[in-house]
Length: 354
Image (cartoon, rainbow, N blue to C red; front, top):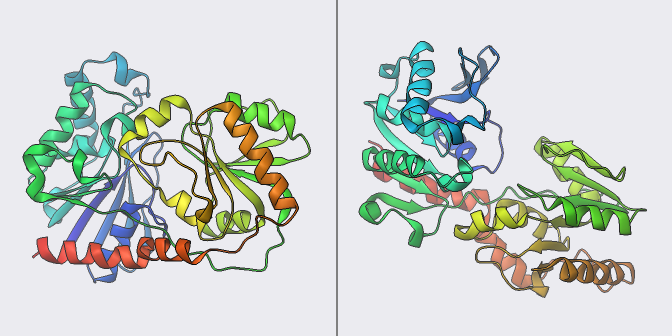
């Protein structure tokens, strides 16, 4: 059986939902083509494993930029992406099933006659950073056409007309092996999507003897020399950095917390929590209160953030906060591991794929 999986990123063995789906299908013996949609440069295909092939779709026009999604009418955007998809020469007849991830891959839906599965990793207002009706309708048409929907969103946010084929499935996290890394008391890791750079700047100025490593790509170049952009890291580099850090800060921007209103815990929180690292987090979605047992400290204002940070660093320095993980935290995290989540995913695919 052959699968085409369309995502906006390359396949890596991570806890991202679409990556776990790719891994699961390949381990079941199916042939999987993981297509990145899209690239402005030509990339050669790569054979990742015996039955996972990495493909890239080239934007032959090279006109589209993120800002154009707010300027172009919907039908022009649809024509643009349909043109480059058709020009790519992909033969959908080679596949039994096509799995589309949230974001730009949903443009494929109306061109495909194969059985479609939708991985709803984010709501459209996050995946496109826009509340346009055009994107909501594009997604609704895809859901209608899909065999089933594997959604990272809670059930109450499912499309009301298609509840019978929508299933909540969180990708969970890959446990980190506790290596004997030396904790650097002056190293703090910054995680998140869109960051509150004003708060981060205030923190970096106040704690000028600390180094702040930002994981992920940022369009903003920080002014403070002690804020270092590390970019996207492979899992080994990511876990080594976490194991060395004294704490984690997730300073979501106000705009981003509004977008996350449909979201609860994310994998980045689970990964840090399993190491007993104190986490300072901007309140969002279902997470609104501090949970001391989990070392999860929630703030709503900058004043609260600075006060909590001072308190965390002080208690860490005098040993009141250490790297021990409480039994309650272990019990909470165990069902969230990628291994357990894969079992749920396997049951879902076994039910629907014949």
